[in-house]
Length: 204
Image (cartoon, rainbow, N blue to C red; front, side, top):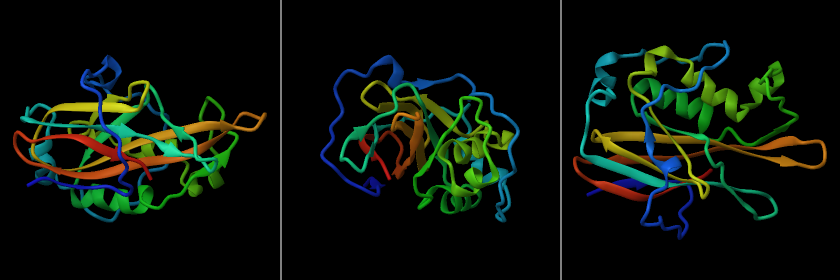
């Protein structure tokens, strides 16, 4: 039996023909600027991560759609943005509980060079939260990445069985100043050998 735990369940079905943007990529995660280290008390135990090494090809598949809804009830996708599939361990569970779940949306004038103020970081600015984990080189062998297609759909193939967090950033411009609003969309899934999870809703 497959268990999929998501914050919001809506009637969203995937199309039958995956687009290139929605397919899993083998490219390395994007380079990230130096940022403050994660404040996590749980030890990083490699044996917990070992079953999830990217060199190990599983038989499961995970697919879904990521989006957020604005105050005006508009559904927003993030075409081409990174979607991360993060294995659940004690270390990543603490990261998720502290920095992802309930972090809330922020609204700041975010420049393209990502120079973030102390207040912006403490607010839980979406790209800062994701870049903290993307910048942890110890996680690189275990975290899988893909990109959302124009309708927010994504796919991970040949996934080992286990429990995963799916996390992506979704932002949009507000007002004439070009400020960005948004947050993190996420879901938690558990998948068994050979199982196909193809309708996961990733939102807040």
